[in-house]
Each structure stands twice: as C-alpha cells, then as structure tokens.
Length: 131
Image (tube, one colour):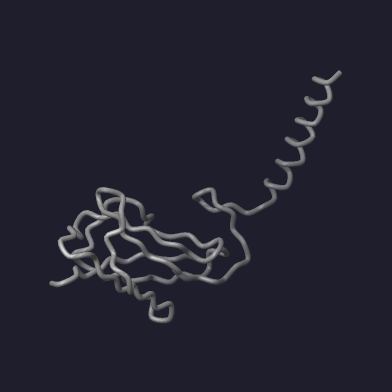
C-alpha cells in the first residue's frame, strides 16, 4: 500500500511538473526566458592559478558606460586568470566566464537580459599594480 501511494505521488508530480515547465519559454542554453529587461553586471572578480583573488580593492563597474576597471596585485600574470562576475537576476553572459583568459588587452563580455531582448557589451580592463 505504501509503495502504491509513493508511486502515485511520483506520477502526479511528474505529470504536473512537466506541464508547468513545458509551457515556460527556454533559450538555446536551456535557461528560462523571463520578462525582465534589466541588464547589468554587479560584481567582477579575477582568480589566479591558486583559486585566490588577484584583484586589489577598488574595482569600478560603470553600468552606464558598460565598463569595468580593475587592478591586479603586483606580479600577477594577467595573461592567465579566470574571470567571474555577478549579473542581475535572469540575465546571462556571452562568452561564459570561469575559463583561463588573457586580460593583457581589454576583453568584452555581453550581458543579455532575462527577456533576451536587451544586450549590453561591457569592456573589462585590468591593470597590474605598480606597473
């Protein structure tokens, strides 16, 4: 009897769960498309090979001009760091962060709003402290 009830609950959850998710719009990355139009980066971080931050305090994110200016600690090899950022709810980023990246030249990342209609390209510039 107990197994029958659990099985019945499982079937009900599967049926109703799939119906509610099946109606929601999904983008090519499998992410939910929402009605949010906000589109900005709220935090930026760079990690070194030891998975520790290489940035000193004072990173400036300008959401109007879509720029990020950061300073890495003296001696950091900014040709081999992993960037990470936080975005407004439901937004996504292209290209993805979290991979080894060369920041010896400014890099560009595009933030895309939850409704996938607003796109803002941020230019990220990293300098090394004391150089």
